[in-house]
Length: 272
Ligand code: 2HA
Ligand code: ZN
Image (cartoon, rainbow, N blue to C red; front, side, top):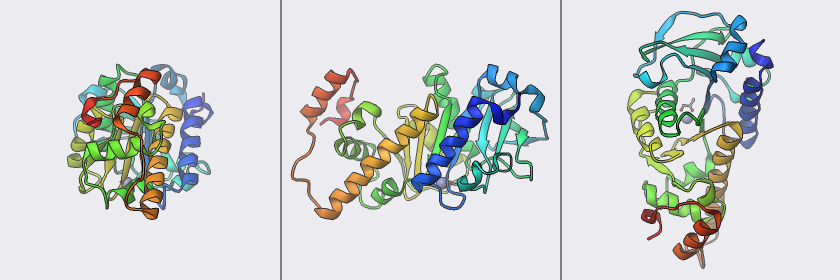
């Protein structure tokens, strides 16, 4: 079977297109990765052509032997659906979790996303804490969330509470809340370590003045998570643009009632 005929490739490409349409991927902004299932990689074995091993730049022993579908460094989301073999690649992780090799795609050369350390360290954490369920890591330049990182304190509790308050669905969609990474140089191990630490607890991590990382089980849930958080941020930006103070909002007791009705557990740390 050809890689581009698989459901996972079609889902990946559709998600990249959706992110482009949302306006979150100017130029080469943002990146996406998917941890491929064993059955899926076996089905495309004849379409793979392994290249040289390269250093990942960090250690991910928990991902030894795994295969990932990822966007290429410097590639534009806008072009993914037009020429996926130029924009995307499949990589294999070696037995030590220190190296990767390209086994499909990037037909005109190139490397996997510049944020590969963050993607892989997030995958390693999420594979462990979700019992293998989470497979998608998505980084987008979400306009309104970025705007809020200039006016709100860079604090998990403040961002969680504000995003929860601006749309009733939010606490149901991300009951664990959101984490915030202060401004750091992107593309390396340091920001990957900081982000993956937050991924132990949250499915969303905000990079101040840069964008957002989301983790989920599949393309729909991960895109939906990013979309829900970013829409809530948009409502807050609109609200703050009209007035610096809310006249009314969803209260802590409202959240407790919501948690009961929707059978989700909301940490008291965000309700006081
Ligand atoms: O250019 O988004 O964080 C890709 C990025 C880097
Ligand atoms: Zn970015």
